[in-house]
Length: 287
Image 1 (tube, one colour):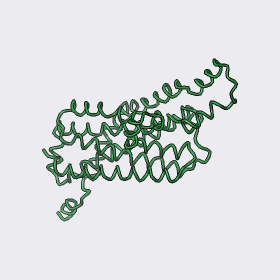
Image 2 (spheres, rainbow, N blue to C red):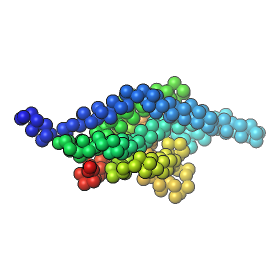
Image 3 (tube, helix red, strand yellow):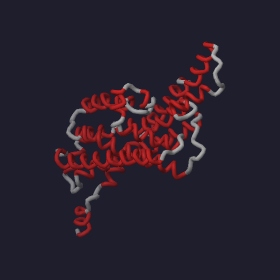
Image 4 (cartoon, rainbow, N blue to C red):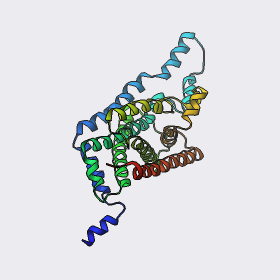
């Protein structure tokens, strides 16, 4: 009896059980893991290799019969993308792509829990409402970090060129950035789904937000070359800062002042979204 009362008073009571339940639905359906990993790898392999921008410069110079320096294409690539090949630029951006597409479906689980009656059962227990939200954030984060790690390995096999000064500490920094991004985005999509009772509504919202979040960022193209109005949107998009931080750690010469700003922005974004999500769960998460 004393142990039961102590568990009720524990603010994290039920957190691991709910998190493990979400993860079990994932690792007991390996086809879901396979598809979620294969999709960004296909993007990397097809889109990244098809967009051979180096060849565009080379063929253009050949067509115009221009006598330009032999490393002209590399100079343009370095100035435009910060790296010598577009594949490395885009492959690193795909890590943020994985996080986005994993986090945006985290809200779907709470919609299905409500429809299937599981949410009512959990709300009838001593589990805090905030724990329900945090457990779904944790499960989404664990899944997406594993998927991002697999995609990073695939990108290396396909020709991703890391900076010569890469260290194990920088690799850990990459996963810290991905963690912050996933926690923030998962919180946002859960906030949107917290009152939803129809999966169609949540899916419509997801489809509305995913492409603007992806293309209004530097995942596929540098922000500095976008139209001015789109630059304004990209500069408030957390995916822009996460992708820049990952590139600073993996393929660029690290600019520590820029990296610090990226981390501060992501930390503030994540903190605000998590706190807001927990507050909304106290107010709106009900039977």
